[in-house]
Image (tube, rainbow, N blue to C red; front, top):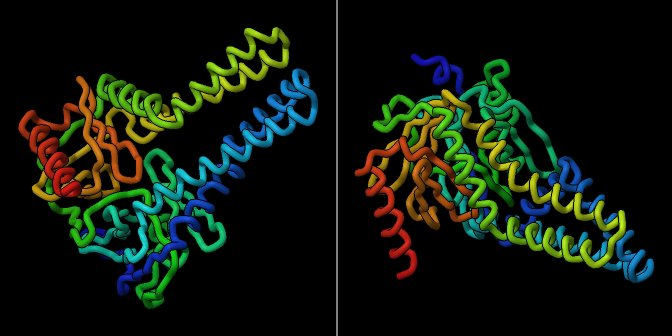
Length: 351
């Protein structure tokens, strides 16, 4: 018997019912963490302070402070609205969220867009904001936001790879919020013993192709266009007002733009290093992916679009997340089946 299967806790599935307040609560937790625990908050405050100084120099202190405050509030509201829209796709009202252990000893987390099966030791950090659980998954240190009632302490110990959890876990209980950062078709059984037919070991060339594809997606996205507009506006102001303060503001905005563009590419290199093994299977109902300690299934109905380039295939999921995959992972017929399945799912959804 496999060690992971023997060590997995035995408990009944835990189910949570989402309501209209689920997505806003998840969004507030995500925005708070982004502003307080990451570099985005201090950088935004610094930019607002410089904008206040520039506005005070040009228009006077009241107008300068007003402009900076408006920018700060607009950024926070924009981030919150974007997060709400994303979480409503993952946990709409009436959706039942669940966590359970599958037949291969992995912890399967199910949302509206699917299920992700996580093996023992696939999480290296856990945080506990009010009513939520933040877990940082390996590889690549990707964060996922979950409701606290969806996971027991034994589940968290299992994910961290601590001592084998007790087989007795709390019985399922109702909840109010849920959300995950992984995907699989609801109701699909995930079995690690099944061999997936498609396989690719990431090379430097395919890794660069993935980074280029993700960078292009970010630049063409809303945040990329917004930051580019900010850079162009600041350049215009700097050309009109030759002052050291405006040059400082231009440097800050340009740095924010570069960080936003380069961040996803760095994340790809961290999550999918050279030598990283990716397995996949294209089925009539979903795409199965396996990377290291996790296996996920992406139903065709959860994909908004599919774009291909010479070295990458980028799937845009319903919650606005880009899923980049190396082009070399798919044979020509498999890629054609994937594109056809995504198109058919889009036609079915629009009819």
